[in-house]
Image 1 (cartoon, one colour):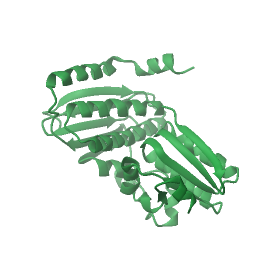
Image 2 (cartoon, rainbow over the protein chains, first blue to last red):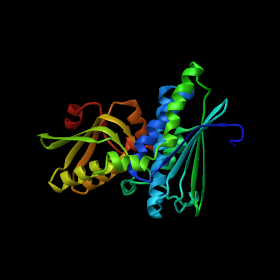
Image 3 (tube, each protein chain N blue to C red):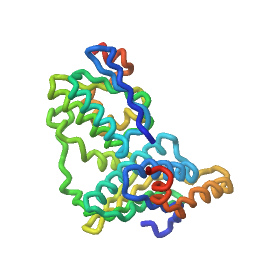
Image 4 (cartoon, rainbow over the protein chains, first blue to last red):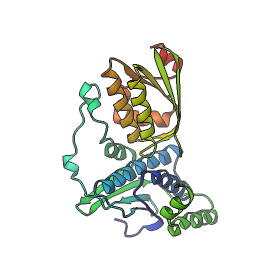
Length: 178
Length: 112
């Protein structure tokens, strides 16, 4: 599916809740700089990414898996492709519980399980690949490349690319954690 | 990013909880703790003002659902204030705009 696409960004985050905001910032910045996307579509992608990262971190937590969650952004002429890969226990899409209707008082017994329906609603195409080795969520937005000056884009991309080199966990521990 | 939470208990019997910032997996527990605390202190009618919220995902929705369930179990209720299209969209695509009373202003919320 991604054979002809180019990788825009690769980001690995420690499986900790504090890093989801960082993933949102980095991916939304990449999407805005690389693609011709209305603000509301960027917001949709940001929310979908947040849901996928949240599920990934919870999956790592369930398995006591310390390895990082992998996020990548690829693009081709027609699409932006955002992939979130975890190494959690995996899940069976067919076995996700159905929620009662929102008008049913029992609906209040379901605080979770909204992430996947939200992702499905916000992106043009999504696939979930899951087994006991982990889950990969591939989210596709149909959108043309940005018409902005390509040289300026390249500079922004270089700046974003520096995230590849950062040891985010060490940076967090050094600068934020007591 | 930290989550800002301000509680106004001067609109009795309503308690207004104004939330600022991003509500996600990292920050939603703080909101949950506040709602649990208010319920345990006897608050019944809670208004959560989302006008200062820049981002809210399903983790935040879960906390609001849990808060509503807890308060209804105490013969109370939880209502919302929100006019931001991006935040309202999260409620609309999950159908939860029909489960919550969503008002345009705090004044409208406390007027019932």
